[in-house]
Image (cartoon, rainbow, N blue to C red):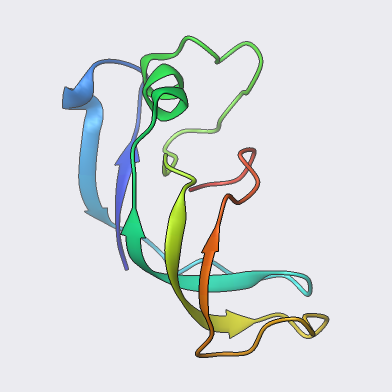
Length: 97
């Protein structure tokens, strides 16, 4: 899959559109095929490194946590959603966007 990732903190020039492995979902996870996303001020502060002492990310990571799209896969414990559902979300900021 393609994703925007950063390998180091910095200005917008650290953003890289790259090929990356498809995420492996856990039992309680939902994988969303992204249709729309946004960049907000927290995303920018994280990219710049202003929050690295409070939110330590392992590089490279995928920034951005505001998402809308379609459920692509679900973990075996997921009961509320099914593949094909339209969703929007603010996922766990401690994980890749």
